[in-house]
Length: 118
Image (cartoon, rainbow, N blue to C red; front, side, top):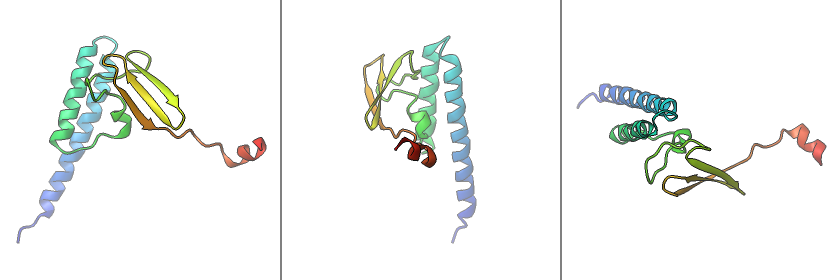
């Protein structure tokens, strides 16, 4: 009945633009953190709102950069602590104390090097 191909194309374009905006906001948060951490937290909040509005999932490398509890932009060694515990990585927010755990797989040794160690 209706031609939905036009709608799908526009929907994909909108999602691409939303993802570009999210990545740009995280870049701004990174650049702004040393001088004004409150502004970097605001950039993260805005990026999350853009993602929710346009149903765009944040990639994993951006998800680990903010605290889901207090919403602050996390910088290792500054306002968060990262520990490798066995098979997972624990990221502790030093503002609110929230701990996030992600599966961690250490890089595997190349085959020839692994044979030499045995």
